[in-house]
Structure formats: structure tokens, C-alpha cells
Amino acid sequence: MAEAADRARAAAAQWLLWDKNPKTLEIVKQLIAKGNTEELLKCFGSRMEFGTAGLRAAMGPGTSQMNDLTIIQTSQGFCSYLKKNIRHLKQRGVVIGYDARAHPPTGGSSKRVFIPKGMAKCRWGFSIIQPYTVNHLKLAAGIMVTASHNPKQDNGYKVYWENGSQIIGPHDRGIAEAINENLEPWPQAWEDSLVDQSPFLHNTFATVNQHYFKDIQRHCYHRDINKETKLKFVHTSVHGVGHEFVQSAFKAFDFSPPIAVPEQKEPDPEFPTVKYPNPEEGKGVLTLSFALADKEGARIILANDPDADRLAVAEKQE
Image (cartoon, rainbow, N blue to C red; front, side, top):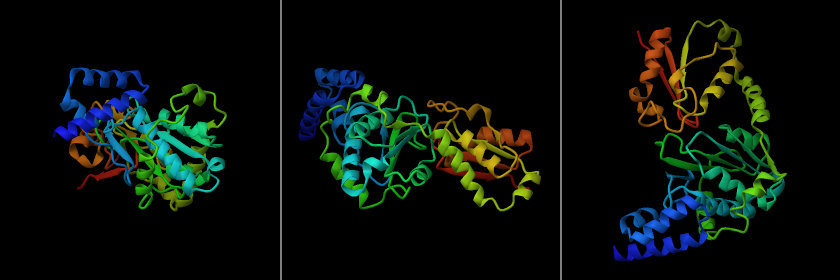
């Protein structure tokens, strides 16, 4: 215990030299001044482990949580690993997307790492179709800022390889090693002005979306039947970013638009109507959807998690 406490205090002291976020910096200063060993161990007793799902943890100060500094370190490691493993990285570039999590440090911190490295295409947007974006634009990689279905205090950092898929081994281990080799913030890693004025930053949300919903129509085999169906659908995005995407997908297949649960339609990082924004939780998450489906005479409910990569389907039985 004593050794762990000493390591945490040493990590906190190092933190003070590297962190330039005034909020998290002040919290750590106070923890050190008060000698709060329990909180220091919570924040600095370990480092988030980078795996096939990237990172996912509570937002807060320290090496064990999501914050500006840990995301700068992660992005530096990922950038270094890409430079070693992807040809024409600068010309191809990366895409960074995000959902509606509260005060996400991840996106801005990532941009500050990649853009000063001269990425010719650093794409940025409020988007959930990262795999398609990577493939469509022939990018080197993708990053998605999301904690998926985790509770509201969490945030996350998903990584997609040049094939549009989430990373698998050995890339996860290689990226983890590269992160540990690039912990000290690079010059300009905290310079927002470089990002705001960069000619390399492009918001591709509108154009990529247009191509995506055109391309998925290749998988629509029964358009005439879809137009005539009397089936009614209810959809909930559970306060995430799925509403517009699902509405557009139904339109692309010539279905009547699904009836959206109004209380959960708009992105809201507080997730006020559910304990956990996970559609697989079942009845607790779908209570409002069941009520709306009964009211509207809809037999089928579709539910997404906040970044809309998870889908639950419920059908009313006779």
C-alpha cells in the first residue's frame, strides 16, 4: 500500500509539469496539498489500458481517467504507431468523430496532436459512421469520441484501422506500447490556435452522409413493398446521436419514418430518462418506447445506444 501511494504521488507530481488544463490541474494540486492518499490512488494508482475497444473510463484528472492530458498522450502514441505502419499517412489523414458526451476532452485534444503533424486530411464532425468514412475517403485511420452505452460520467476513445474496422491484435498492443513511449506532451500539443487556423482541418459530415445514404440503397431489395407496408416502427436514440441517421436510413429504403420517442430524441449528455443509456438493459430503457408504441399502434421498436453502434429490437406479440 505504501509503495502504491508513493508511486501515485510521484505520478501526480509529474502531472503538474505536463497538464495545462486549469481545472484538472487545480484538482490535482489540491489533492497533493491535502495529502489525500485515497483520491490520489484513485486518480494515479493505475493508467487506463488501451485495448481493442480503445479507451473507456470516467472523466476526471489523473492517469486512470479521461482528460485532456491522457488523450494527448493516447493520440501521440496512436499517431506514432500510424507513422510506423501506414504508408502515405500525411496525404491520407484521419477522421475524428464524436457523439454527445458532456464536455468531451477527447476530440479537441486529438486534433491538437494530429494537425501540427501536417495531416493533409484531418476530418472532423458530429458523426457516427466512422467505418464508412475511413473507407469512402481512403483515410489512414479513424477516431470516435464516445463511451458508447456507458453511464454519463464516462467518455471513451475508439480507434478504427485503415480497413474501417475497429483495431484488433497486434495493433492494440502496439498502440499501447507507443502511448507509453510518448507520454510527454509534444510541442504545440496544447495550442488550440493551431487547430482553429489549420488548413488541414475539414468538416466532411454533410458530404459523407450524402454518399453513405446513397450507397446503402444498394441493399434495398423490396422498395415497392416497403412503400406499401402498414407496419409502424417506434425508434429511440436514448439521448444519443442516432435519430437523424435512422430517419435518413428509413427514407433511403422508402419506409415511412419511424415514430421517435420525443423525450429521448435529442442528444443529451445527462441521459435524464434512463439510468444507463444501454438498449440491452431492456424494459428499463424501453419503458417510454413501449408506451409510445401502444399509443400509436406500433408493433416494432428499434433502440440505439448513444453512438448508435448498438441496436435492440422489440416486437409486440399477439
